[in-house]
Image (tube, rainbow, N blue to C red):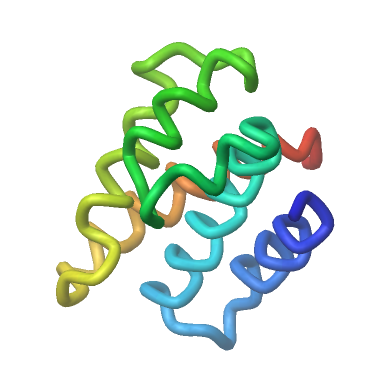
Length: 105
């Protein structure tokens, strides 16, 4: 899952993808890092799950406030895309979090 998260993060940074697609890919990278930290317990959740993210936060060294943008994104994952500005904010938040979790620059 962690290796796939790295692939998703790389794809999220490809400018030829739409901003919404890039935000989704970055969220998926964060989510896979969360599932990796939960190990076998990850199978207990219906995905995507804000609860999985919340519970993974402590294993990832994150506070609830730090994981909150991903929890919010999980709740809106399948809603229609917002404005470009909203997508940009979501993208920026998810990429920063994914980079932190994957320890990349």
